[in-house]
Length: 395
Ligand SMILES: NC(=O)C1=CN([C@@H]2O[C@H](COP(=O)(O)OP(=O)(O)OC[C@H]3O[C@@H](n4cnc5c(N)ncnc54)[C@H](OP(=O)(O)O)[C@@H]3O)[C@@H](O)[C@H]2O)C=CC1
Ligand SMILES: CC(=O)[C@@H](O)[C@H](O)COP(=O)(O)O
Ligand SMILES: [Mn+2]
Image (tube, helix red, strand yellow):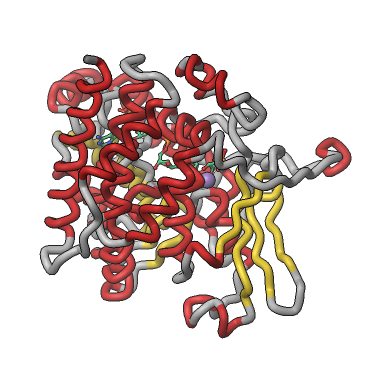
């Protein structure tokens, strides 16, 4: 039996993970679950999968969960607070850890799982964006296996030669073709974007996802974060990654080789495929996803991204080029801006303005010997400046 901890189990990726895991009860046992404060969904999940531990980051939510589960014959041990995430990420009985917390809040637990040498199923892209060097070094030191869950990176992993870690050039890889749907505003006029609502921005044409990543897809910041994520996972640079807008999200990304071959991974847009891939790797197992019917798909279209509509993509290229703490500031400012947009405090186009303003105020510097401590300090400073920026926008 493989023991698995699911960090962020109440979210979109967490729910899909439990769906796949519960299809294979002979193979997996859920050891621990975590959420921020969604007690109702966590209580339902605990009754269904009977984990040994359940973490609620919010202490009041933890108290409420304990009460709600008191009638279970063997209720899980309910832990409270952010530190408990690191505890369940490193449990000896957890062989695999699904890292599916949204945002930089997932970094400490993703890192704890990596340091503990787990198979880490990495959905939490922000952890690599803000601390890619630290996480990748920790994986080398502990022998942890990082398997990408992000659909594009999972596709790239599937199309890479087995020896890709030796260097892409050495194994004949010319470049990565990173697909992007273009989101709900792919065809919108730049002038119309100022007035779009959170619900419009979250209405992704192909994927059902949490609200933060849905907004990132609409601004194409998601693709920017994914370029940085790919650089860390595949030890390459943005120059070797071409963004290809592919509105159907059927090809999940491609790898181009020096002999002219292009390998692609295709499938219906459903995250249970990459989740099942990473759970079973190097084998394959059923995910519950409908097989792809190319006669229904019929068309696969491709176009270059439109920079005038998607300034966030350019800001991500800038942060990647700056390196060091550049991506930390980019990500922190984006998290503040997206939360403000979802709360209707700013407009859609102000997301990019706020990120740019924060990056201008806090120039990138090398990550020093303090490592994670330095990253977290810059993250906090950038959030503070972005909050000030919000107040300036409101004045
Ligand atoms: N959804 C998708 O299809 C894809 C997602 N990803 C990545 O996967 C990650 C998760 O995305 P998604 O599932 O959409 O997100 P959701 O918003 O749906 O879920 C987020 C999860 O994280 C928990 N959470 C939120 N804030 C905190 C916090 N501060 N501390 C601890 N836990 C917290 C939530 O708990 P609660 O429910 O209590 O709020 C929930 O369990 C993101 O990094 C995203 O970029 C990547 C590719 C595809
Ligand atoms: C499912 C997934 O991996 C998302 O990151 C997806 O890629 C979002 O779609 P966009 O291509 O629109 O950003
Ligand atoms: Mn993706």
